[in-house]
Length: 248
Image (tube, rainbow, N blue to C red; front, side, top):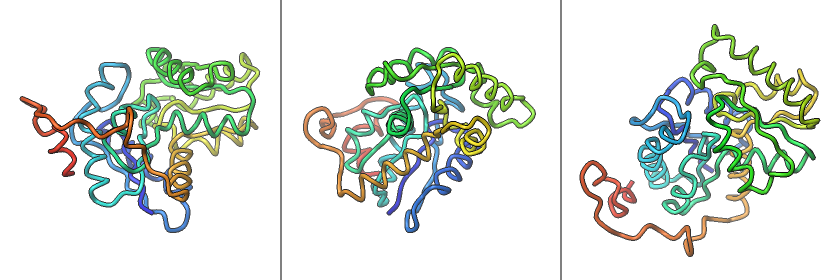
């Protein structure tokens, strides 16, 4: 089985870290290919960044499926472009927010989601409602810029730990979901430190794809996830016309 893990931002070091986290939980025989687009924002922090990350993300997904990927993990906690990716791809595509919440919901009653900047609260709270966890999960910002997670001298680790401690106390929760793919390498140490399950969505996403592929399931191609209608795209987006991008 080959799983494509796409970091929708262009920061190569974060992609490498995400790939390591994915490989650490992958089953024997599962190949992880971790990639990021060549174009787009260096981090995704808000609606504007998310919108401009989509073309590069979709291009990588199309290329990955054409090259034989059996499933895709979108490694941004905003579940960036998830619906568009499912319409484009035939193979299963999962987002790390949905995957992490699904995993947490099976092992805990109350969940604290700890993310980066405050501007991420509204989009993530929207996902929490969409996925049916509004009554069980609360979202907290640590006010850590995403790229600070790549800088060992930034103090981000200490800030994140303080935010998790505060969230657990205020929520009375029994599990924590890490609300950024840049935190993918921290889940095991934080689980040991806080004594509650701490779930990283990258790892959860890999296991979700393995399960879906193992069940022989693919993305529905009727209704909202039907293939995009063939039409011309103009200007700078000419290469993203359905007939063009689907060639991978």
